[in-house]
Length: 290
Image (cartoon, rainbow, N blue to C red):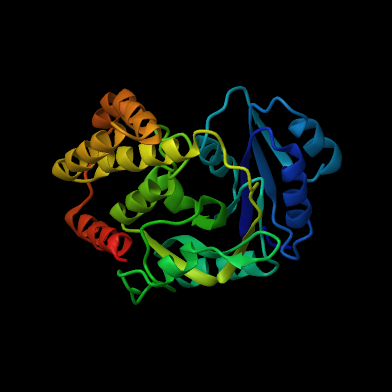
């Protein structure tokens, strides 16, 4: 028997019951992928649950919460050529991982697959599906689907070598809207990022919003701009957030987060190559369209 071409990495924290549901789905897949749970210093029974109920699943316990960097550690620990990401509330449709591995084999420049995502028990198509499917970047001849500059972390498959080459998820962002920066960095290194609807993930998020989530997303979107986009654009977006912060507490929290991290962002700043910046601007235009 040959080694499996694809593994699954899950970063989790204090979501033992939800994680158990995800692991049941993943361990029953016909592909039988190896699964690695990276636990971000959970205080609940996550580690005991994995060890007792899913002894075939590898567990990497972290002493502190590393956010999305937990995924980086998971990929580094995996030895499969490709790695699929699940969250503790998402899993893969049977056959999808096999299709993803085949796409990676047939398209050597493909670094990341953005999958089609179905949400909740009703299996509603996630709105991001249409956004990715109508990407203004079109489809390159050597890629299997539309080129994109974003994806859902819980519905993505990476070529391990491409992910490591790009540096993985940036530690400055921690969690929330961290995907765009990785898409930029993959493209800057010459890797393709494509939406492939034949690969499907199921996402059943908790309907209750997480406290501070919106402010964290807005913080990270602006920090991504400071890290990779032209300075005039970053300044313009910062001024716009500052104006909004005068009347909106969410914007105010986001702005405080940006200002606190800005010195580190400037030290880590690496502007995109011109051709990637042009692609990013075209995607910006798609997001502004009515």
